[in-house]
Image 1 (cartoon, rainbow, N blue to C red):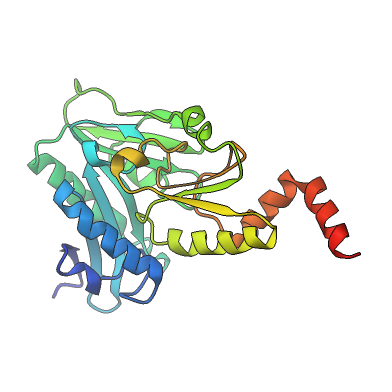
Image 2: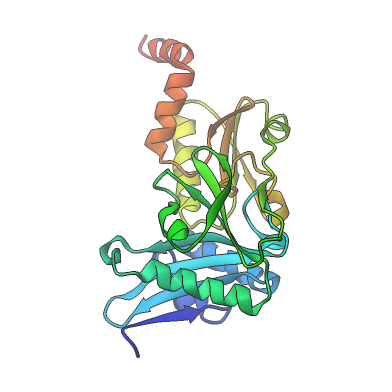
Length: 266
């Protein structure tokens, strides 16, 4: 085995692979992610693991054809990268570029128009630096998100965001709703923590599972696989901790919760 190799996963081997820093079978998030992947391979999704001879699985890249992308973008004929990550301990070694180059080769082999990716200045998603260095350019921005593309033909149409926030928010005008897909292995714990936190505030949580790429592309944020809506307002557009959720709710409802707290102390 070379020092590093890229493992192209499938339904048979994914259960034994590390997923986004989570070891095989250790968490609900890992199990749900693996089940999600097994349903996506037939749609053309690729999930590749960067494996180190010494340290095991230390990075991943996931991408899908634009017609089956789990991001709110229109990118027909492109490959769309969902995520690219390398373990923090192994940054600075050019490993992210190794994964990206593999995706670009795949796109050329498949005669795609190019490769697109949603990046963010928020540390929760991949930043734009690696992609800009590889020749990607920005085509649209919805801060803190940016849509980048590397075209193989200059005449190809630009990908674009298709975020329609108001349409989604009108569906969830009462109470607390979590829109969640298993594409991200962090979501399972996040949903559980927020449900517990909302219970402590006397709120009931409705969880709407996002089960298809089409549903994902209808979410009210470029992140595409997670949102929290409270009384028709988007209050979180990516997974957050239970503590962060509590802080948001206290800021939104300071007067209401202060009254409830005073009543409980009588």
